[in-house]
Length: 350
Ligand code: SAH
Image 1 (cartoon, rainbow, N blue to C red):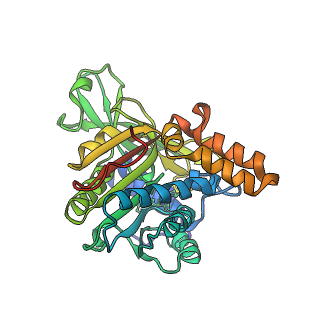
Image 2 (tube, rainbow, N blue to C red; image 1 turned 30 degrees about the vertical axis):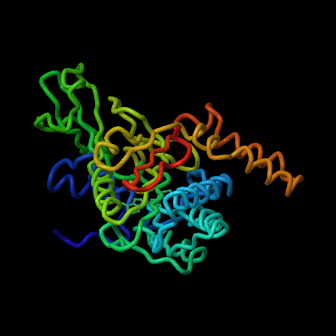
């Protein structure tokens, strides 16, 4: 194959690859699109494509830090703990959480799992002491791990399966008439499909995230051996369900996931039941983000911040509502914790 033209877009590269070797899986398409998307830019904030809980308010990261410190204390304050974050974005959550942990006497070294060079540069400004990893495999194998992942799993590639009436197939992506197009592929063995959906009507879609399950399984093995906890906050469903949830967001609006791959953020709902199934650890939740944040004290924190800065009281109240209220992030976002045996029960899941 000749060398790709300099400056060729990802769309053009994928189109050439499909023309040469045939359709690719949705998972390949999503992985290639997001690797390109995140490598090149800071997607967060008003000038970017989307905003996340830690960017809405410092309360989010502070509460996560206080929650970790409380769990650590009630677990006997073991030495040698590490703070680990998956996909830390701008490093805002980590900076806010570490400040809250320090106030509680916990000052762990910081390990960040991040593939984007652009975001690593931003993270280094806030967290100069951190060490970076391309995958969870190189995380240190000593000391309890306090692991946080906010809006990380929704960005990992999903496989999509679609029924045709004569069985389940993997959904593939082809390129025709200048555009990308998903279509049913070859018949699969039914092992990725949960039993209740095996006989679903034609055109039903089921999504699976083998990449997400592999990360949870690997981290669970570490936590079982080293101690600690994995906290996952993301949008999605508590129980496995059918439906096409792949979406693209660009400049704070929904976009077409099949247009201009690599120029919009591609995400899918997180299947919390499937993630939990990948872990042998003690499981807490999923509970809704609004309920969890209220249970761990967001209202007290909002009141304290508003008292300290009365001129910002209405902004603080608006941020609290955005994180908690049902018509905002409160219900769609969910929280799950997977904890080592011998550690205390994490707060907020009663
Ligand atoms: N947690 C941050 C950012 C969420 S955006 C926040 O809440 O603001 C998703 C993050 O995951 C980005 O930092 C992105 O670069 C990172 N990411 C996406 N796919 C990844 C992968 N496969 N491995 C490691 N990091 C990844």
